[in-house]
Length: 178
Image 1 (cartoon, helix red, strand yellow):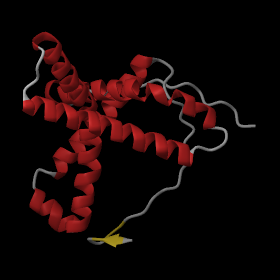
Image 2 (spheres, rainbow, N blue to C red):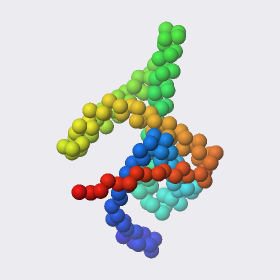
Image 3 (tube, one colour):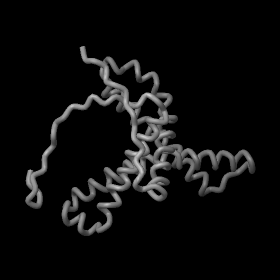
Image 4 (tube, helix red, strand yellow):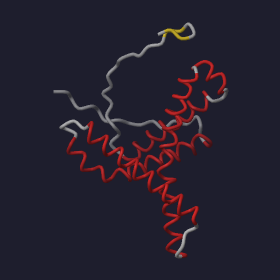
């Protein structure tokens, strides 16, 4: 494919990378990924009109949805959960919740429930027979998304306080293929 006189292509290269074995290594990896998404978005949004002109409106919108969605999704779970906890605390402490806080809490709960339902249904549809035993662990999805959100918050913090720092992630050796 040619674009602005440059040839664009994909190099098909299989990876044998194994996920980090320790939580701190996993957290650092997710922080690095999310920080990279943020930096990529910020670089392209220095001049949004130029980016839109170069990409075209459709690709520009796709870029916004893809990168904006990845960044927002990494942060939203902790925000939704935090607001639900604040609304629950207000109700328990005062016996009432302001209408706006109650409506927002209902929207938060609906968003979280819908996200879980979509994820679980998708996992059930696409799981291979060897992956089906893993479906029993889907109850822990809330915890996974919470720690992804915490990695997202770390990424935003690092973006401001240590933009050039990249935490390296050690990996285990891949198992030999039989």
